[in-house]
Image 1 (cartoon, rainbow, N blue to C red):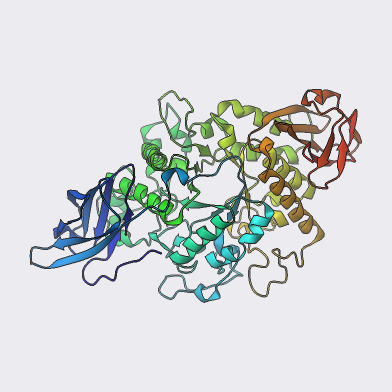
Image 2 (image 1 turned 60 degrees about the vertical axis):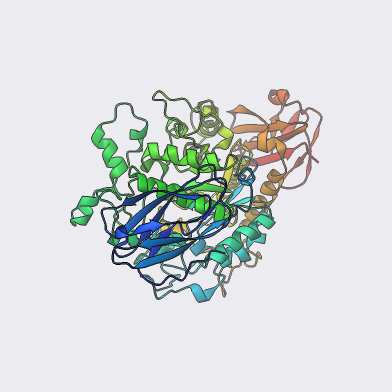
Length: 611
């Protein structure tokens, strides 16, 4: 449990509010905020903790203290004593904690995992008493408003962990749960107004920790959605910025001038010919007007972000980080950030959001990928937007020489570009794009084909909540509010309850069963986690992909051809399956791999040699 000292007097913020002993990097920079804090002379007396330097800011209300916490420091509490010229003193009792686990025990997500993405406000309302907080700017709950708050919370996620675990998922990525004290549309979490506080409408710090602990007991990893690029315009520091360059375009902001949004030309990060103005407008432009752009070139801001993220890893025993809008931040800082995280947690995982559909742009950010300028990202995982696009196009298109399944086939063939393609995160959709059922024109079989391929290919799969029951936003394409629809059964009085299955249509129940079958099989499949991949160029509307390892082979046959009843298996002889009896992972039926395979019209077969 996080304990915030009851402080009387001038101090209003101390961040980080506590720290730990035993890090590789012994340096700690503490930010203290309050009236005229810059005048204070700090004093610290604690064995193993050394006051190295004190920094004043442009604002007189900030003090930055550099400490060194050496290996002799023991867990405990020491006083930060602030001495003022008028003889007054302020004291903050600062806690140094023992680390709950070894650094190597923070094991991140990998290709053996399957991740369930949740927008917490729209998943389940486990505690109606926290729906409204009158101390915050937005004080309404309205489930009829796509962009309003609906009341979903941490307790709702805790209450339904068994459902997620039962589907076979091994990790959960909730969108941000920190305070978004904005006047409207505060539900999504990406306009953070306090980087150390859980939004009270989502719950408490204790509940966030309980979520992590309950997940751990079920073998689930908690991935935290972090935002280094921006904050919310109502962040507490926006009324008193410490330095003249704490945010980008700060002079314009402080003079109430016209702020420029980012030009969103993310290619400037890779482009050897990019102009200085394009780079500046990309990196220093605000993502949107309500989200001030943080300047990570300011060394105090850089320290702040890195320390904040380490603080959350330790506090929640995280199993990974998803970093929002990765290419929008200063790229040299992002390299330093990822290196600092991975230095402390060598088995950890970070995935960065790079929304580009060109594999070369995505591969630029992956650790170990050589590039001309010698840039090293220190980022192991990126999001595979190119492959997501190819999958949707392939299933929507008619089969010709260069359309249809060939898009998936050639998309996967691009894996030569990546250092470790199995570390990419693949997904049918997410919280920022149309639901995959909508993208695939509400075609149930094609949706199952997409998921089967995604859960079989050499990647880390991520699925958005509700995909398992065919949630869609067809009535309003590209509408983020509708994309983030309430999960049925998450609120008392819902006519349909997807958690129990009550009220689901036959198609919805069938999809839910399909997802459970394939994800639970995947959980224990070494062939899918790290097996050899072989796929065969599409012919006659049929595309075959296989994964194999140590006696286990999994084969996916995708077929769009209604008129093809029997598939000649001669072409697939190199799989070495001739004469073997395979099991259909979805139906549990036995299938003899002989001269031909009965297709029974358009659809798919997901087969395994494991009985």
